[in-house]
Image 1 (cartoon, rainbow, N blue to C red):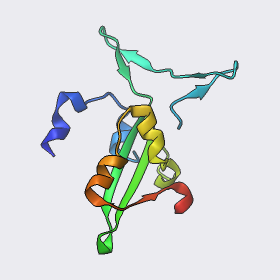
Image 2 (image 1 turned 30 degrees about the vertical axis):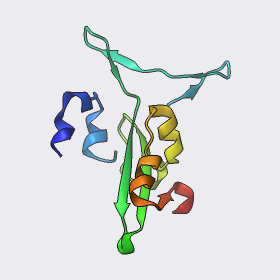
Image 3 (image 1 turned 180 degrees about the horizontal axis):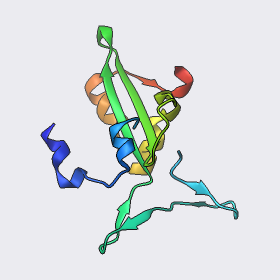
Image 4 (image 1 turned 120 degrees about the horizontal axis):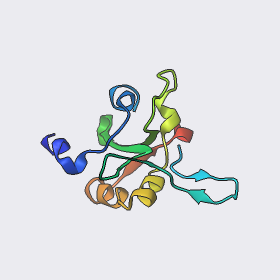
Length: 120
């Protein structure tokens, strides 16, 4: 828990995202190409993330390991929208972040059930 307070784990985000409910990072422009756009703040031009992700590794009854991965915009989210709306395949987070979750989880658990929007 203490690791969450390191400055390397800090990113500016809309308070509503952090205090309440927690789409695609890439946006298609008129020319049909994908672009990543983001705001910068302060004199040092700190990048403000457009989205955040969370990867949950849960141990269900019977020892089954479940993996749930979410991507949410760094913007107010209507609390009436179910969190399942933000479930994404873990591969999309791995691809965008450059982090690998599944191999590390499999190495420890051996068997993982990925929970996605289509499996709910």
